[in-house]
Length: 526
Image (cartoon, rainbow, N blue to C red):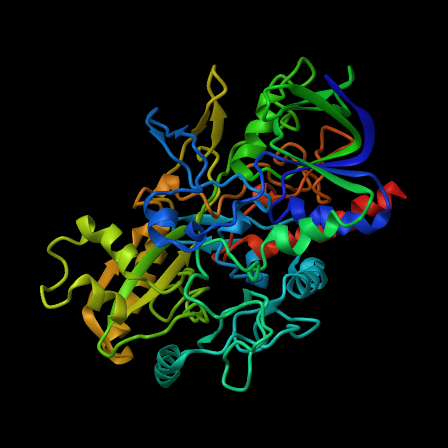
């Protein structure tokens, strides 16, 4: 069954890449069709329930992938309008300028990008303004040049986190306000004003926002795009493959299975894939034909390869004094991002997580048995917790890859020890400071509820790199415009295009690049 309409552009996926691109194209007047595998996230009390979200995985996709040993695991993916941004922590960092060049790590080389920081900088600024990022440029000594200040002031620290910031400064370090996308208006004391959409609650990290106050792709981009008469969306459209003309140079059909089981083919002059790094690679591989026997855009044999997901540690320290903070995700530290006095290689960055609550700590209880002292019951532990996220760079390895088996199931191979030495040193840096930061020195507990129950391969929230862009068609799938080398009308705009991932959350770079590519496609449509 074929859709009887022909579109100028079809965008597959509504996350940071696809949703943003659709928003960029909406004012052009061109006919844009958005295809989303899921539906709108149900708005319900469970959105803010720790047990439902983290312990039970209520909103996680009910599917399994397979690791390199053939063992199946549930990936950390969510299929809703807005993609994984519905559940992200909205930490919207720029990559450092050095991340765009070749960087030597203890575990190998992080390759250079085909564009420079300066090429993306104007779009970083536009992305920060579009996604209502609150922050203050100039505080982080590792950040690159900026053409404009954030449009919104930083989210103010609550007293315990302000004390942490002061204590870090006393040690000669440079803590800064974490850039975060929230629709918040603060009064003189840093509290949410009466008319603010964001209420500065303790559900900021990993939860969908019941109030629509977190800057996710649905709220910021998809819903406003759909207000344009030329933009439409089909939800429940699981795109199974892309069809090409006999020459193999042009995508002619987007074949999707709808929720009622019918299969429909949609057609457009330009097709944009933004399904997430794993699913975008899987779609291209599933679309193999006589002209593209290894999958679409894959004459270089790189599609699915170089999968990255960051080396992460979620850790909970225990403050000597109570920590009544609610909105804790306001501070970050990059002093060792590119190296340290005692280490010549990058370590990565430290940032705050959302505040632990008793339900989350109960969910961790079996892993902590015998670790904490009896005089710290879980309720007390939750009231004293200070939660950190440590992020180090994962390197792109050809063998870390997405493949499909005979049944079309996704297999994900991953070297879990890839370039982890820097992250371990970063942990030791934090551990060694705890006593000076008003915390118990020996209570730095793993907080794997943020890392998919301690299964590194299941923690796919920062997935990237499977359809990399570059100047050379022999070693990349996409050109510098994120158009497939092998096809004339196929683009990929999620984090698949990353040649390297740096050590900051990838969302803002995906958003900025989608704005850049959106301008290129808009110019082409003229």
